[in-house]
Image (cartoon, rainbow, N blue to C red; front, side, top):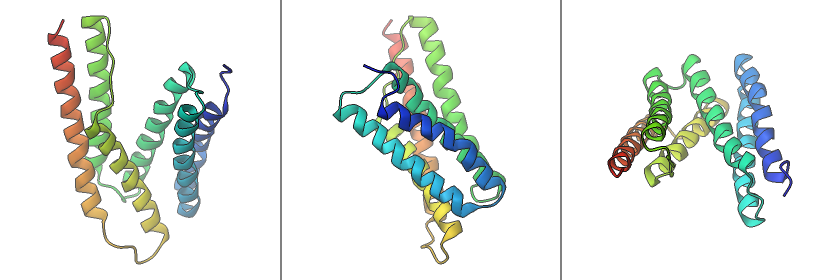
Length: 179
């Protein structure tokens, strides 16, 4: 199995698009930012689908795919907060959840010498809502008269981000007590 297969190439494309997305936001070319985010979302969907359907999962892809997703999410939240489209407290919540999960994983690994973080339903919903919120904000910036879902999406994203963080903490504590 080759390391640089189609799914991994799509993931690398997503990583390469990140500086272009950042530049689009910095230069207030929100239309380009929307297109780039759309391409990133499509490549994210395609790389996972192709990897599963064609049996092209690799250790590199398993590592890079979630990393590319996190880079895109965190960068998007920070930029959209800097430009006043998403509240600072939500960005802090999103980033804090990720830091807590990674720190918990490291501690669990140090204590048990084996730690596997399985995505939870709440975690998947939180990530989905984070992506939907970014997508909505970029659409709202570019398309006048969008339905006003901004606050609803912000609070739903916050709720599921916090719930999933608490769930990961609970699962980690439960697993550490099993040893």
